[in-house]
Length: 163
Image 1 (tube, helix red, strand yellow):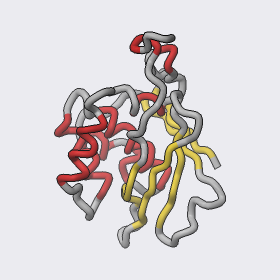
Image 2 (cartoon, helix red, strand yellow; image 1 turned 45 degrees about the vertical axis):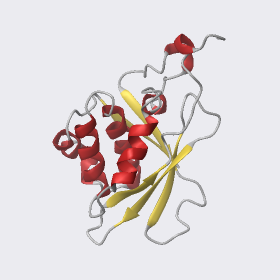
Image 3 (tube, rainbow, N blue to C red; image 1 turned 60 degrees about the vertical axis):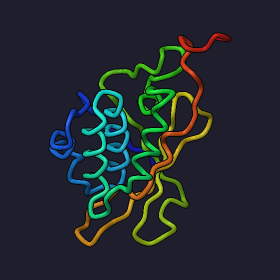
């Protein structure tokens, strides 16, 4: 199943993220999409981005190592999270189409482990989709367990001397 999740604007704070209809975290597809939004905030406001991720993680706070990993991923590029929005490709420097739309998919293996969902989001700069794992807590909400979104993709054409 593929679910398109649409946002008119990107949230600037954890409070704005939580106030979105998807902020109830009642659906794993919504939590996966909100993870992209939280990562997109990092280049402008690290603390706000990390606060959003903490909200999405629920009862499991981020470790200093996880925060360092995210910081390291943004050292060379800030375009990777934007690449997950529909319309964002190397040719347009990963500028998404508006409204902001994320297509989140599952597959026959997404629910192999009870209480977990492994969902996929396609990047306009990669050949295969990347995954986000969510875990359902006792409160019925789907929290971010791990994300594999901040991996290398094709460089935007404006930064590629060979394009």
